Picture 1 (cartoon, helix red, strand yellow):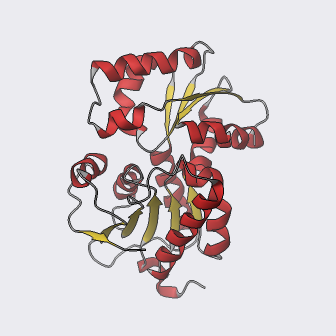
Picture 2: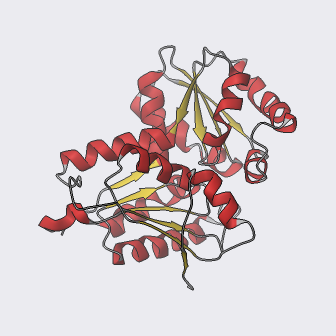
Length: 271
């Protein structure tokens, strides 16, 4: 049960690697008073090639770790986890509110697509799970969803090739079939993809609205904390903590590119 001092507790955000730092960045900008603890399971990334049972097991471990840190809200900043293991998080969290990038992205797409024609891009695992399309159809059965896996985007982003000609050509190839369906909204269904937003906007053209789950989840978090009486109003500077299960090569460089600022000290845990 959350106590009266719960507003001072941090928001817990987690992902299989560094991608979820785009969500942390959006939360920092939207909720500057809120403290955040981020967990990236960098020792076991990528999750996309693992079985559902394994992903559920890893997700439960991370959820329990963050609950021990007394978080007041959990944010699943990993599309793969959200697609296959969200129920595990909800079960363990009990009365702690849980938000996830798929729910946020699906809601925003349905709300903003005037023509009811939505494109979704993501990793093969996320696209094959059909989680975005399924949730959008639950929210509005009239929505037409056109999905496209973009397996090369993650390595291109981690390489820092955000404006590279190779990335532009790759984006043109991936988006061609989706744009041919005359979509008016495009869901960025991977937490790496917001870094490609300027390039994707160029390729898709001004008629297509980019749905960034990081921004929409920050708005959802702000609304939920306010309604639940959990928003932090005072208490000094926010505290940001970054925890990983391994510190791989270039983690600091890649992480700071995603976050848009210094990571500071990164804590490592051993499972």
